[in-house]
Amino acid sequence: MKHKTLTYMFILLLSAVYAFSNAGTAAAYDFSVQTGFQIDWWKDDKDSRAVQAHIPVKIEARQGDYSLSLLAGYASTHVEPSPGENRTLSHLLDTKVNFSYAITERLPVDVLIGLDLNLPTGKTNFVQEELALIMDPDLVSINTFGEGFNVNPTVSVVMDRGVWTAGLGLGYLWRGEYDFSRNLQDYDPGDIVNATAEVRYYFSPGWSSRFFGGYAWYGKDRVEGEDFAQPGRHYLAGFGLNHDGTKWDAGLTVRTVMRDKSRFQETAGGLFTEDSNGHGREFAGDLVLAYLLNGKTALNASLRGLYITDNDYPESSSRFTGARGKAELGLGVSRRLWRNFRYEVNVKGFVMHDEETNFPEIRDARDFTGLSTVMRLTTDF
Image 1: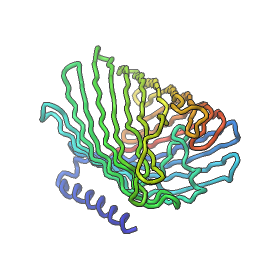
Image 2: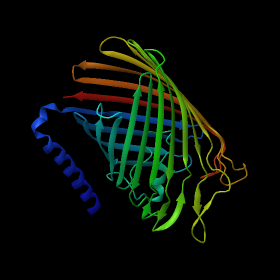
Image 3: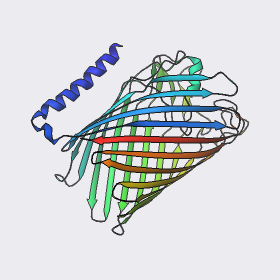
Image 4: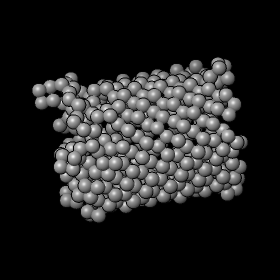
């Protein structure tokens, strides 16, 4: 409780300093508030099902090159495993604060400096029975209910040279200690160093292509001061094609993700590198379309495909995981009701197939169907 109180005091102080330092130009502020709800539902062919309702609230303030935003939320999750007892959790989520400062048109490159904070207002210290509520991110939107106090400074640099634009981003995520569950106390997740890069080429007034990549290095996870595990490094590569028009926009993106072998705790202490790669390779593609029906209304549609190969372990191994395939279709509408008020409604449905797997538990092949409904309300003042 003391740690949370100090965290709140820090962010309140940051907000106060920001506001008072610009008190003379308060009229130049731009504020926006966004809220709404999201409902995710899924079931499988083994009679398991779940539903999750999520209410986010985002407040953002901008003045010149500065911006400050706060994102909070509440989620209620209900799981009906088969076999097993039903589980329900309703709780606040962690609160996220972002501060950014942009340096534009003053240097040969544009620079964006950011600071992200994660405030531990969510749920941690799970009992064993509640762990079933932490579901796969391909099934529900909220699969992390709470962490520790995290600090993530970032810097991004963008260079524009006519039809070419290039950008580079660097970040360091310091993750604080917290009690993950009753059986995993004093959990200290490793820090993360990440880098992203992107090059865009505008080959006509309305069309552009993009090549992008990413890299992430993960530090050692520790429990009660002892090395526990270390995820393998993460690599991302992708290509995109975009159209920006007066009446319609379109975007096609394909990408692949590769992960190195992870390290796990030895019985006698220390970490060992797993024999084979426990992660399959991931391939994904997204097609997004938007059409401006009139000055107030826009329609959108999306199609997403995902395929993850089985991992490198033999099928007889206790660490074998089978392949996954998923297809998702979305339709939506956004409309401005008044000058400073707009809403957006999106509905997405998916089908997903998982092959047989032995890790983290033995499961037969399963087929999933799911539906997600999102409504957002935004106002500016």
